[in-house]
Image (cartoon, rainbow, N blue to C red; front, side):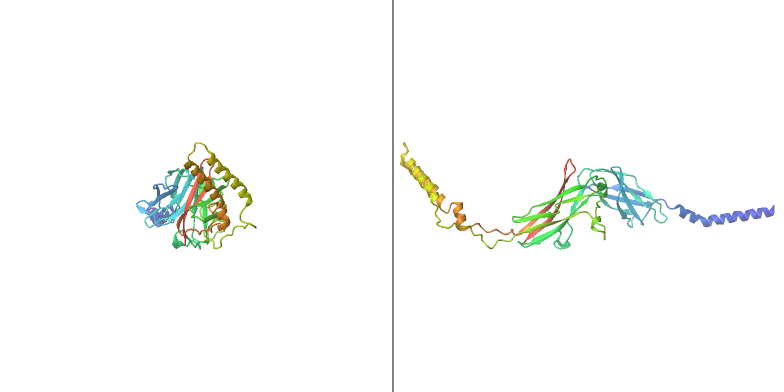
Length: 343
C-alpha cells in the first residue's frame, strides 16, 4: 500500500509539472481576443471619414492592419487597408458611390492577437459622384505651382486629366462602359481648348488609382487637354483690288435717278413748308453720302482692309475642366480647376 501511494504521488507530481510547463503554450495557442470598433464621421459629398479602434481588453493593439469592407448592391468589396497607429487606431477615408452602404472593419490575426470584426455601420450617400476628375503634376504644371499653367501669348500648353471611378465597388456594378465627356470653360478671348480623347470610358475593371509600376492598362483612363493662346498678327490683310476705275457706273445708275426722284418728290409735295422740304433734301443727301463714301462698310473694307487679330489678353484666368456623363436618369458632372496665366 505504501508503495502504491508513492507511485500515485509521483504520477500526480509529474502531471502537475507537465501542466505547468504546457500552460503558457496552451494559452499562446488559444491567443488573445480582440475587439474592433468602427465609427463613421460626417459624410462630405461621397467621401466618408472613418475611425477604427482595435483593443485587447483595455490594451490597445498597435500591430497589424485593418481592412474596410463595404456591402454594396449585393457585393462585398474591400475598400482600403490601413495600418494601426501606436494608439491602436486608424483613420481612413473612403469614397463611396451614391446609394446605401454597410461598412465593416476587420482586424486579421497578428501574432497572439486573434481576428475580430466590427459591427456594420450603415452609410447613405445621396451625392452623385460615381467618378472623380484629377489633374496631376506634369512638365507644364509642376508640383510647386498648384495646377497653374503659365503661357506666353501665342504658346500652347497641355496637362493630363485622370478620370477614375470613385470606388472599386461602383466600378464592379457596371454592366456596360460609362462614357465621360471632357470640356473646359473660363478661357480668355483668343484662346481655345481641346481634349484628346474627348470621351473616355470607365469599365467594371477600371481601378481607382494606378498601382506603382503597373502597366497603363491597369490604370484609370486619361486624356490630354491642350490650351492654345494666340499672339497678335503682325501682317495686315490686303483687300482684293478691283481692276479699272474705282467708281462703279452701275451704282451711279441706281443712285442718281433715285436721288433726283426723291428730290422732286420733296419739292412737289403739297401743303409742306419749306423747312420740311429742306429736311427731306438733307436726308436724301445723307443717304447718298453714306452709300458712296467712307461710311459705307464695303468702302471701308476696300480702302482700309480688315483689322489685325489681337493677342490673347494677358492676365490670370480660372479654367474649369468639366467631366460629364449620364446614368440614364440624371447628368453626372465632376470638375477640376486649372489656373491659366497669360503673359
